[in-house]
Amino acid sequence: MRRPTLKAKQYGDKAINSLQLMVAIACFILACSVPVRAADIQAFVDRTNTTPGESVHLTVSIKGAGGDVDVSAIRDFKVISRGTSTNYEIVNGRTSWKIVYNYTLIPLKTGRLIIPPLSVESDGKIHRTREIVIQVSKRGQAQERDVFVDARISNPSPYEGQQIIYTFKFYHAVQVARGVNFQKPEFSGFTAKNIESERSYSAVISGRQYNITELRYVLVPLNPGEKIIDPAVLECNVVRSKRNRHRSAFDSFLDDSFFGRGDLDPRILRTEQLKVNVKPLPAYNGEIKFSGLVGKFGIQAELEADTLKVGDSTTLSITINGTGNIMDAEEPEVNVPEAFKVYKDNPEETVKLGTAGYTGKKIFRIALVPIREGHYVFEPIQFSYFDVSKGRYETRSTKALSLMVSPSDEKDTLEVFSAPDMPEKSLKKKVEFTGRDILPLKEGLDALENQKSLSLTGFILFLMIPGLSYLGVRAAFVFTQKSDDPAHIMAQRAENALKDACAIETSEEEFFSCLYKAVISVILSKAGIKGESLTYTEAEKILRTNGYSEEIAKNAANLLEKIESAQYSGLNRDKAFRENLLSETEQMVKELS
Image (tube, rainbow, N blue to C red; front, side):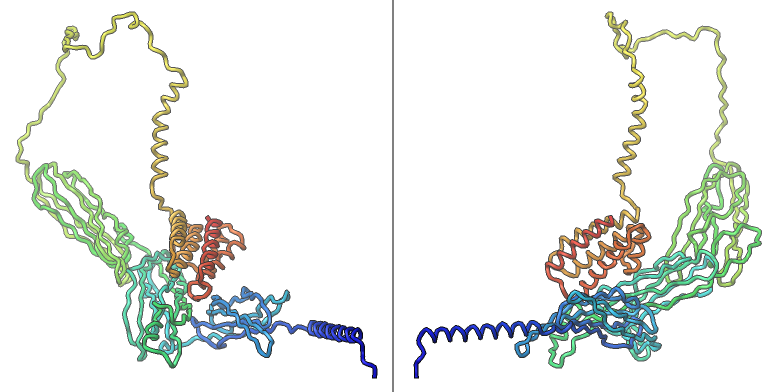
């Protein structure tokens, strides 16, 4: 048999190599032609039944591709972002990855609430998740709740001008992280004043011990009619310990919120809406003038001395005291005999704000100087007020006061001065020299020269000097005095908060707190009011009301949410993230300033 030559063998090897290359290319083309499976997108919650104030955890997962989730369609819940996580897996040589978006949802009302289909952009396409229904039901018994709030008023049917007490209580049987945010009602139709700083104590309710924080306000209705006190809102984070069977006592200690080891469960708690039926004051038909005081009051009067001499002085003191609008008390009418000169002093006011509302006294003092001797009687001083405990007008009066005035000890004679008779002789007097002339005499020819006259322009400028001086002093006063305008104060507070944020290097909690304060302050400056916090809806509403576009208003609200999420989620808090967030805040404050 004929053996193949070397050249034939080389041709055969080349053919085999070409065939292998073609097979590899074909396999690659087949592999590329296999259709790529679309991204697997799912949305689910940890529970579908909850109660007001308790949160629901929403998870949106995108498997096989990246994507962005739009949660702006959620209206029935407050949405707090808890960051994202990414998982990579290699199984049998195949690589798969999944990105997970985490959110905390806090229901804004009770009933059947909807999480609508969410738009997810992935692979250049828009996908939609399924709709999720959450049932939010009221829970009637306090012992079933870890945290809850309550608000009450001391009198639901007060009279116009009668003070009532509004009490807010925050109950918590579990640990609550620092940074609780309380939003008091607007108290429309009332004047409102916080009685004192918060009061904390413990109480056992239905066998369970609660820590209670209490706030109280004095409310005074401005006019009659039905008034609505809106719900008070409290935002807090409940600390949930991490569950692990193999945990040491040291781990339990580190679960304290001070170390940030516990899981934070955000809650938004609302009180019930309160109705107040304000009754009008009945018609007044009294003989003396109504003082305008509503509450419970009394009056006293006394003289510093009951015996006096002509020309000496004594003081008549009139004191009105009681509970109610004591600060509105005016000096009652006093009939002073004509034999006295009267000098009135400024009233002295002592008013305290306590659990019963406004209490105190107001003292009116009148200095009396007799100019004639005799025995004088001061009639009783009367005043009328509305007694809320009796539901009618009451008149109070002092006792009559007497004063004995005796002659003065000094025997002064009345001197009468009359002009002397005018002599008919000349009134010229001899000129005498005092040793030197007041002005030096000018003996040269220049003494006859006329003084240079002032031009019209110079004369006008001369006349304007006092006015210009006044305007300069006034302008300096205006520019140097401290402004009490709330808008200016809040704008300055925003600027200071940004400076503080730039100076903070280590404390993340203080950094995010300063950013939050800066945005809140600049928004409140647009409304011309002072405050420490706002909801996202309130912030957006203030900006729209003050002429800002819908886009800027939404961007400001989203920035507030982003800052709050960063503060409590514990995710994405590296240096780069903080610098970007600071830059966004500075830009927003600049746009709103």
